[in-house]
Image 1 (cartoon, rainbow, N blue to C red):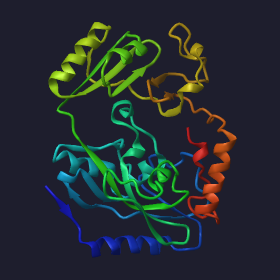
Image 2 (image 1 turned 30 degrees about the horizontal axis):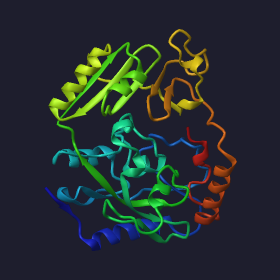
Image 3 (image 1 turned 60 degrees about the horizontal axis):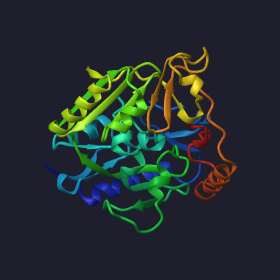
Image 4 (image 1 turned 90 degrees about the horizontal axis):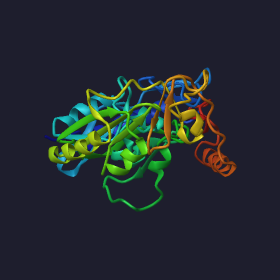
Length: 317
């Protein structure tokens, strides 16, 4: 299977988007609004635009795919599933590719599949002057120039508005399996070769395995020896994400669950530094050096503050 859009069609679509963004007033890209208030709300009066949609080109043998940033992630996933591939993007209902990249949240499988920012190979974006800029390159082993792609992931559209992206793809696993039980999450991670996800709520551990059938079954036997049994899937994931390292051992001890108003029901995403709770938590205080660098980047990329005004990546948990 292959998909191709002519270069002229691609250029026209991106140029139309850049013209819509323009060079002057406050502007933001709106997608599926699944994480619309992450990092703060856009200021009133901000003009909203939509990014181009659709698959631009896809040759499964290259294991890369070019899509408009406004393409729903579910649509992208369906195209890749037809040839047994996937992109390392969380498949959130109604979310767009550009929106997921702009928010920058890794999904539950980051422990085994890697971080979201490693998926983005090339980004075509519109800068604060309304000009089209290309960052990165269409190959997996591209090492030339500054790695602006990683900088754009998680920036909430405050450095540039994504129009089109090239994503790396991976083979879909032949089989997968969830197991759960009263195991020690640290021991489980130490004993298993390559778990894709380990979740822990202070009492129960859930582990996800994927790969070739024989390998998954061998790992599942090891997990069963540590107290886990096969289950249908993961538990419900609480809404609010926070830094797991901000939690004390007392908060996470099974015999002493978090006090009311701290987390409520929670899940720790073992090995990634993240936890999820029922209640929002203030973001940890960033290092002053990080704040200074962040402000310098914003001043360089968007000195007039017109891109997604009101939103701040430093406020993301």
